[in-house]
Image (cartoon, rainbow, N blue to C red; front, top):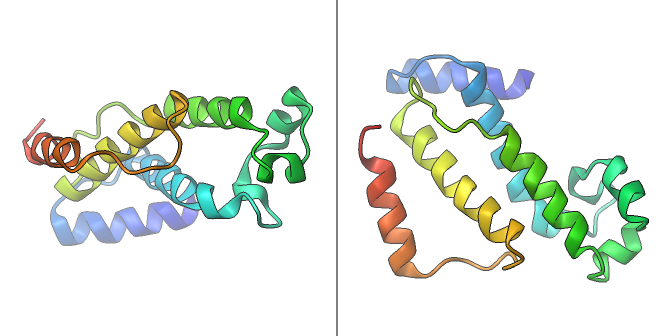
Amino acid sequence: MPAARSIIAVESALFAGTQEDDSARALVIHWLLQRLPQGLATEDQARIPMHLFARHGLSAAQLVAGQGEALLRDWTAELQAQLPVVLAGACAFRRSRARFDRARLQRLAAGRGFGEPSPLATLWRAWRAARPS
């Protein structure tokens, strides 16, 4: 959170947003979400909490081998629960980034994997995110 707060402070000064912990939390969730696909095979297992490994009785090797779909769904549900619904004072970029992250978390929670949405869905989401809330 300290690094995210610093980045949000700079972003707020540059783009006339407000500094809020919700924006910093959204940025941290974005970082965790971006780390997820490639980070599964690394030493830190994409920063997935150990309580999820214990709950599902899985090891890091089993997760990398593709046996952790339920664990990934639980992790994305935890991230979704922490992602603020509204970032009212945030700059337009942070609001749109949070909207795209929420959609990606929903796809992961539904078991649709790390694939990209269709171009039309991306266009629609971008248009909606650019509109003032």
